[in-house]
Image (cartoon, rainbow, N blue to C red):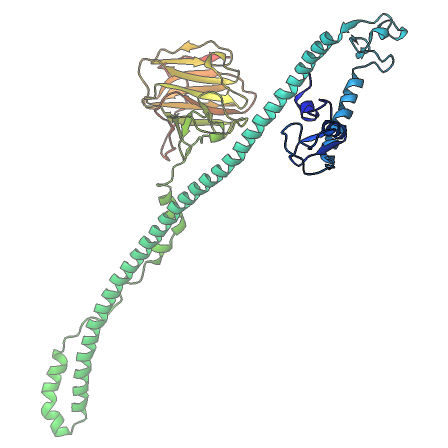
Length: 477
């Protein structure tokens, strides 16, 4: 049965592929011989299909249709030749498994295929299709992966822009606060300087005015007395007694002296100015011994803008799947430690599910039951404190009181990770392990309540003694 495309290229009269097709005025096409035969002996030249009278005696050739027909016939001939054996012109019905090629029945008995294995062409085609599908499946999976990676990379590129904009905004806000503090401090110090200037200028003005009045009075007495001294002898002697009394009775104030402290106390205003401002600035600046790395934070977590607290968010964030990001409800500190002693306090408060400790960078936690190696931590769940590490089995700690804060002290060189209660200076647990790579602070929570890294206060005194007499729990792994 002819295919749809073959029907489109078939003459309505002879039902064969068009040969030299012509186009009637009604837009129907026919083979040139077919339409002439159809019209022979008839008084009017009507279309064999729609019966419309053709307005032309010799209809024009349909060259476009002719080209399509010739191309179709060529393709059909090529397909037919592909199904025949090139050596024996027989239909290819078998497949040689040794030569991996279709053969005919004559080839089956030829010397070329002596001792070879054969399969019917349809069975071999089915087997090879399945094999090709398996090979194609690898490419399809790879293509799917590449598309997923591209999508994630696109999301990463967009997230980089978002991170940059958000971080720039935070930087500007922080500097705005610092600028505001410095501006207010500048205004306060200049105001204090102006106040001192006003006070001391007023005092000097009062002293100058008083002295001016005294000078004026003395000047008048001196002037009058000098005039009398220039008078004639008789007149001078007549006024002498009064002149002496006037001069002697004139009260004389002590010699004026500039009192100490009259000048501006420049040293008070400028002495150690930057140091004093810095010390005052430290009162408004908090230092956190550990900063969270948001690039490691799980999508379910909500990390504060100052990167010092974390809680389980209401809904998952749309974050790129970068290699550092953890699979469980966890986040790592931004800085790792491979030497020295380090300590940080975490406020757990009313958080009902948390894990605190350290982990290696390669740590990725999919499920707590299948935790990978490289973790040393204490877990709080269902009002129980449980320890777990790389090799030691979980241990329930004999703690009854619910803690508000946890102090974690890492002595990398001393091979110890210690947990304690800073409020009561009570030892909780110590891991003993020889660390052979950098470890990072670990924070995990499934609670909507925050875990907050507490800032370091200058007068804090951390007691690092892990051998407190209150408890002696210790693991070595």
